[in-house]
Length: 555
Image (cartoon, rainbow, N blue to C red):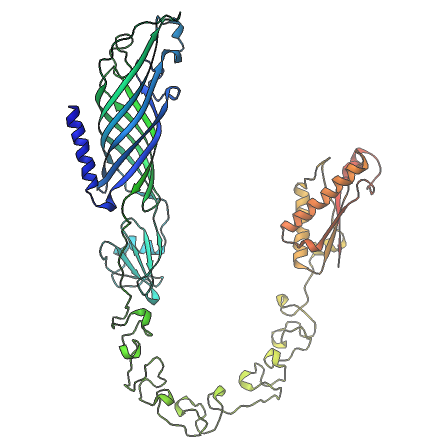
């Protein structure tokens, strides 16, 4: 039987090696193993008797939801009665250690489709719900969905940029020439279950002693190799085209009671098991499949978009892909008279200029009166004589200044009178040319900012202090012409040197608060005066009032 199992495992390994390289992967596993049997203290995973274990496997997917894997593993197993609470009552104390080698093969089942960790973007949604958009039609974002090509979904964007998605949602972006600009792998997680078969070889080192220390002979080791059945489950994280991580918990049913070297002495009715828990690092052989893209030719005229000056209109190769409707050898893109032939010297238009101003009649708004090109063939006029021609003058009948496009500004605030709500009073743009109003809160700040109070020996502002400083910050940001002097005070409970340090810290804390609210440090000045300037001289209430920071606005 063992030879049959070994042969089957080798067949699976050779099948994996002969599989397509991009579908074959190698993985190494690292974790801990524990034994469940006669000497176990628990029916479940026993961390107290856990040992290091590792393995290596080769595998390949055989179906979107199934994969086969084969390899080898190394396990250390141990157990002892000394971990039991009633060991002093036992007639003998037994322990064992074994090194177990395993050749294994298994089938993995992924019952759910991959759970993608990256959200859909707009292009991916267009692909995901492709059935709602006919092939060749444009989405609202200006993308055009095309038929599925060679296993990839194609999206055509403006200027020849193309985006492709594979079945799992990974994204490729190519430029007009077919060069790959970017690639985004779509991460996912997949839970899985597995079961299989393995051939295990083990070598038990067992001991048996009485509580008084006398050695007792152990049972003979009747088995050293066994066919075991591994099964369990885990979760896999695909984070890179070639790399993945997985974690698993697997049990091994051995069908024997001699994995620990003891059977009759303890519990001959139950067989021994061993468990592996760990993580695996997977590496997929071969390059991740990349779509092959030819240079884009959106209009299908045989001229690639990167060389086509008219990529969305079929044209002639001699004219860099642009059409020539009148056949005068000048592309419609540069031909100012695309429906009538004309010489290149006249930009493709017939030579007709009735007033001789150098502007063809079809472009001349005053074809019988000589004019200038800026006015499309008409003569220049300035009705208000302010030096700004009428065609550039926003106030052509009222003399103004060139800086304001020919409009006047009576109060000199830089806002023309026709847009100034207070044309006789210097104002600000934010107030439509009127002076800035000062509301009640700002008036209060100008007349005196309330002091911020502190608890004993602290620099914590408290809710009331933060509210005051928030109003001060709003004022200082709105009126940059004002600066602020912050003075910290302390009570007289401590010596004056300590009081001065504490008061300076309080003033500095208020300054840092205002800086965090967007006020420049260059506008904030602070000092600490200790207890030298009390509000009232004595009393606990007075001392509370003396623990404060005061503020003075100045220009």
